[in-house]
Image (cartoon, rainbow, N blue to C red; front, top):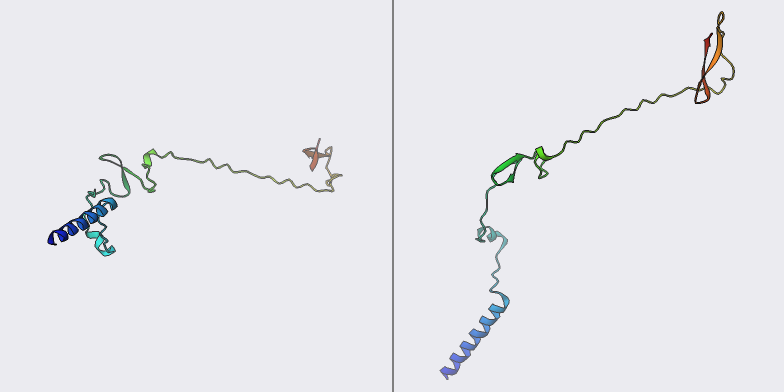
Length: 125
């Protein structure tokens, strides 16, 4: 009978071993508080350059003041030309059919045109 128990125990051990192998190993749950103490096998590298500098190639740093991951020397400088428009308003009176001035001497009152419209009057020869 003890021989039967040994076979039973060995059978149970084989079945449990097969389950562990199929599932990929044992899952040991860890509290979030304990995760900082786990050894993961990955080495943590200290950054070579201190902020605001970044390492653009192994062992070389460059300034990245705007923290966009691009060396400031490599960013193209965009200069926009500001063009100011001067708007000249023309004051055109609707009732400019006749000269509003009295010209002196030999001067004659004549219309001044802009875009085929009278914009003002002037005394001239």
